[in-house]
Amino acid sequence: MRRIDLKKANAARSNTIRDINRQIVLNYVRELGPISRAAIARETALQRSTISLIVDELRVVGLIEEVSGESTGGRPPSLLSLRTVDAVAIGVDLGTVKTVMASSDLAGRVLEQEEFPTDPDVKKTLEKIVDCSQRLIGKTRGAIEGIGISVPGVVDPESGNLYVPHFNWRNAPIAETLTQATSLPVSMDNDANAAALAELWFGRPEIREVRDFILVLVEQGVGTGIVFDGQVYRGEGGTAGEFGHMTIGTGAPVECAVGSRECWEAFASERSAVARYQKLARSNGDDVSFSAVMDLALKGERNARAALKETARYLGIGIANLIQGLAPEAVIVGGPIARVWPVIVEDLKASVDSSICRGFPSTPILDSTLGSEPTLMGALSLVLASKFASAPVA
Ligand SMILES: [Zn+2]
Image 1 (cartoon, rainbow, N blue to C red):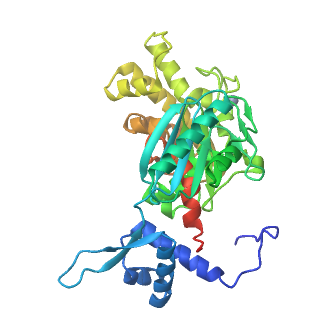
Image 2 (image 1 turned 180 degrees about the vertical axis):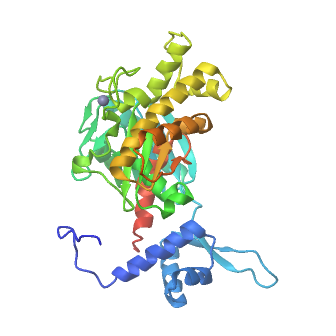
Image 3 (image 1 turned 90 degrees about the horizontal axis):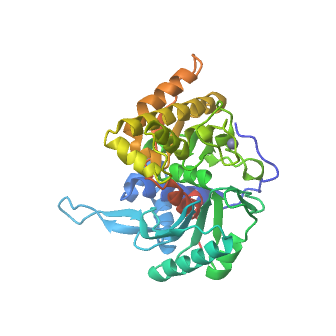
């Protein structure tokens, strides 16, 4: 049973049950739409009259719309689906190399997308984010309801304080400035947390049934987003999930973000895979990208495949530690590396199996279905998930 947090407990309001029912109907439409009122009634055991009332409210606030189904002779049946004609969210995927921005509809479909190099000067980057937001807002006929930002750093959910180690940005007023410039609410979170939220709401269908899972985000570093009981676990000051810096061994091919050669990310990040490839191929050029190594591996090039398989082995050792400590129902691996899943999956799973002490049930390890930029979907989810997690009616 869940312990009641007295600090957060509110006296139950008379419309609490109505709010919950509204959320249930909205999420049935989101996951199963187009769907009829009768089908929702069958699935939920809610009364038809209750459903009709809720549907009317959700239509008025523009969350769902009525569409015509296939006719089986008579009048085509009226079905409900998420209203997806206009953009409702803007996502800012702030990365250490580039920043990707997009607008999306309620279902998370990207409608417009732009990108630019991230400037180490936070003021310059912020100017570009403001400009791009205004362009994206100008391009939509609908009303943007909020902006979500995913950052490669720590965001304190209470104070909003921000720290991005790569650029040494501390407490830069990103959210405040963007709110002032656009008059929109802005929410910001760590990139792996945001990607985990995206997996929870827009990821694999299997994950909808899962309450506890871990997203391992492999990029320049390695980050993890932890979901417990259907909620992203942030920890004190938003610093949970820094497993990228757990000690895995000695003599890693590269240094971690803070200069250690013993951390998981020094063994399992994109940078480590590139370093392994360069060593095997005896190439000292700095210009080999992780993307190029993946392309070579997919074409069957021996050194690139070996570099990725070795990286997958270390990824597996870290994942085995997480499974033993946290016992999630599933582990998802996300980031560009998901593109070479067929190359790495066997070595990854074999490494997890051999690193886990016998007797533990095996945990499914899945590749992310959110594409090579799960953090962009994460940024959008910071706006979209709040609409589905509670459906306030104006
Ligand atoms: Zn480290």
